[in-house]
Image 1: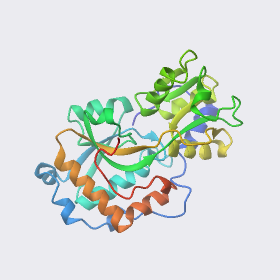
Image 2: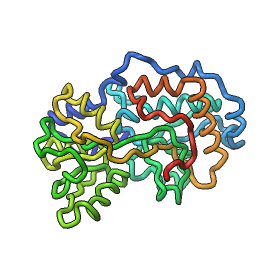
Image 3: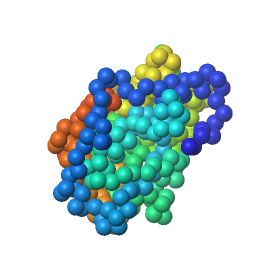
Image 4: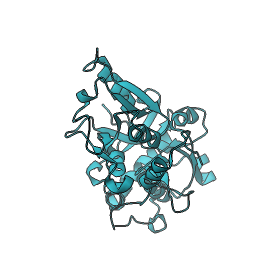
Length: 298
């Protein structure tokens, strides 16, 4: 399992552990994979070599609750919204899966080198990324600006970040949004973008006073703001939407059969209600999609 590269002071380490605590704030339970029947039509789309192997290898970065994170109860099991959807989709296809937990910025290069069959890590589908990868979109995610409780800098929108230091997970859509702001609204008073290897490390920079805020996906930000120190450490600063973007399972270009199999499996989960049950169990139903599409970003 990958460890944080940052040595945390005890209070921050405790906060990080709390960020990972609790699988969901809902009492509802998602349907276990063992109860999900194989969808024969979807399973027929699985490439022969994968069907023969019976397993797909999946890259992830498990420090991004509620999408994927290490269960603090055993310090080993990877859980989260994405993992529940992955488990249900592979059950629909009659497959097992093997997770590899690595640094976020190594995921797509490792997909290029065929280390993984797919990547599942809360990754935003974008037109730029579609040049090199295919996405099976499963969720619509907005963004959140996370600040210390009390919002000492009075931040309410992206323009308020001009001239401030903002921590962000490296090589993400959120980093690109900050860079776009520097080229536009913050030109002449640029945001100091402090890139980090994990979302936990970005929060640490805010808690330690080295950054005024962090920009992250809304579901992640809301989850962390509610969980860490009983909801007393952070808050969501923005009072309106920033940039809603689709998230997708990621496939190498040319791997059309496996991509289409997962699209069909996830659509089957939508149609039988399992998809809604999973999203509800993580309190993220507002991000639900009615149709699972390939490369939906415009």
